[in-house]
Image (cartoon, rainbow, N blue to C red; front, side, top):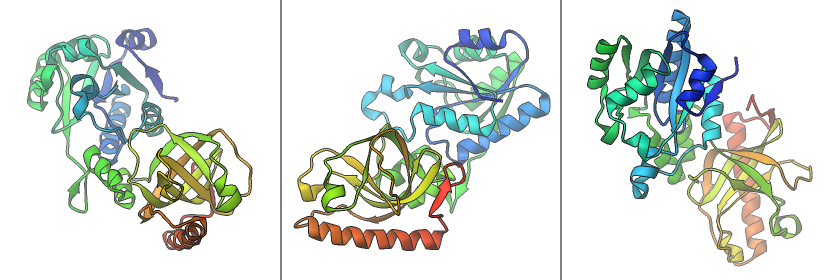
Length: 324
């Protein structure tokens, strides 16, 4: 079953009516890391066991973007990426609530009653121990459990996931990526961090004096720290080993941040269309070289380092996008 994506409680009612009840979780789910995946898996298992709808309620934009913009995090994923990951879990539906001042002013009980009970016919809610909801974050799991007793729905608190002694969280993922430690983000996400967007033509230097690269215009807010990375670049249905530079091209006195990927053994002429870049490991910092010859020599070493990494890690030279 394809994920049903609804953008208002009214759309939910129009789609599902006043029929069966729903097992769900609520949150921002930025990154869909292993902790999120655990909660969503348990939602799905419980819903299937009780023949009820499985769903997630999420927000766009992030609440802090409205309430305290200066504190809003740079998002790991776009909304489209989040929805794609929700779909992969097998959930029945996702309700994407537009977060604005009006929604932020709902008290915890108003949020539960007006949306989750009245519209989604809540049967059970699964959340982490730090879950907060309602105006000013006044609602917590203790209050949620009391509401459950009053209104006839179950509350399950899901324990966090730990990796090598660290609790998996969006903040931990965000910090690893921002610091360039993309390899550290992989065990937290259960997959490589990726950037998606459109290919756009560059200045043409790569094809004429260096190595031909594909320039990605990323959709994400969060970019890895400037540097050179061993990556996979996905074009169409195929994933290719690649080396990616994130930075300003200081050798050519660049100013704008670019994401440029050299695809190993790739001979096709591509000037546009969608691309995804998956970040496996950091190779080095971005550097300014005296000229193109020195940069080309370093890029040759980068390619060799990436090939060595791929050989050791088992990343295939070519793979379907779904298998890679």
